[in-house]
Length: 168
Image 1 (tube, rainbow, N blue to C red):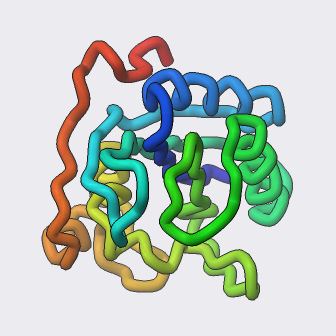
Image 2 (image 1 turned 60 degrees about the horizontal axis):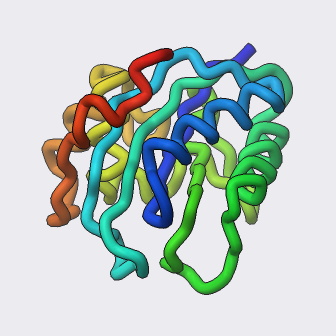
């Protein structure tokens, strides 16, 4: 069983509700959610449509391969209404495979660690809540160190604590 980390984002509908549905959909597919960060709000990165995002990171455990988890994640996104279209379109559920243990995977359609995670505060802030001292498998800095030097100027702030998935 591998510990992996998934980034969650939503800017269509009730982000907290979609987050809870995401956890339920992952469980249906045999992905055990061990911990989640708090929910955060963030300004849209890259000029994304739809306004403010809800973001979080999930620590999950899964047997099999990174490719298998990646395929499950895509099924969950679709089940929750994700329509893939133009880049930076608004979305109900966006899940990114950030880390698969300490492995480095360089396939044409799957890169792990996620290649842009260190450029995005909306990923690093919740990731640092869970694993601030974990070292990036390629860059070797801790995630807390990488957050301190992150060039992303966009704001990330905690959501109402009552909207988070505190029941896990």
